[in-house]
Length: 221
Length: 221
Image (cartoon, rainbow over all chains, first blue to last red; front, side, top):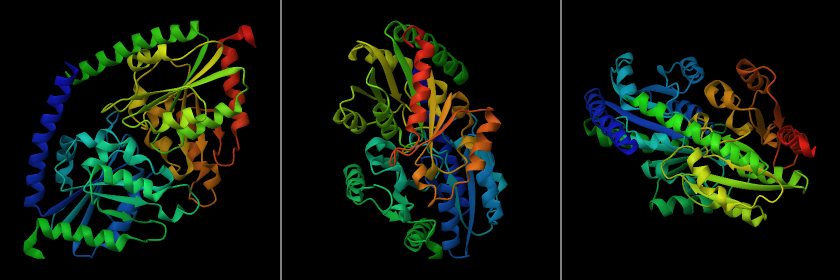
């Protein structure tokens, strides 16, 4: 019974995600689903990424949180169009929530939509949103064992961002152990080591993202 | 339909949690449910707490994780009896999982059982396990906005541990903002500022915990 309900929910979500996907294709939007534990630096990473992309891209953000509008306010202060989704008790975003806010953005040109999922390394793994790219942000202070403990979400990821690299000297973090954990899940995981504080690593990550845009919309490359 | 299923699951869990509670009362066990985001330092905090409690207490640990036995191995290395529960896709522990492992500990004397829940600031808030005390560990590198973004789990907590205090100098963290967020949820929240690295704060937290034991089992105080 419990399993059937779960399957029905996942199937319904999957169908809606395809509709969202079609909407994004038609409106020239590359959609990046950002998943991470609470406090890994999702919001700061998105802001730094927007700064590092050329002006030809119109960047926008969906903020998923249980409660509060803190992150949306941060985005708006930076002049980035942002819409908040408060999920209440729900531990992840789903396709229906995304569909509900599609009309609130302006899609005038080449668009990149960052979806900041609820801070959670478990539930977001099961729910597609119609996104093109799935990213997991891990941060140095969280520790080096995350790929071992939360394999599903890393398996869903197309690339991993390792944030807060500036803290590496002062915090115990075995990089080899972290990378071994990723390799055990998938060989040749793209990993971008960044620091929102120093700005390191954002050029490489921004270039990778632009490549993904031109892979999806090759007519503009 | 979805809501009814959710209610049924929660009600069944609640009933089982009362059975667990009775088992723990009979066997002289104080049960501490430790909830936190991934990487907040649940395992290290439990190890340091066990070290700080007098030998008269027999400490034991249940390790909840999606996958891996990393934390259980750490406990066993320290000589702490530990049992792993791997939840697979489940984003929290529940009373039935706890019931399943009750027979695997020896309850010879005054016992403190630490239940390390799945690293998640959302789902564990909804599932009682038969515990006496709920603790949320927040850590400085996670940021100062967690009480605003994850109110349910903080509302469930009897006390908050603020971990990784040693990083306070090198990381942006507005303590007033953090405390204001807690006060808005509940006035006079007990908060223990600790660092597993320096050991600071564990005396005060350990004393509080012992008081809770003697409140539950006053015949030994």
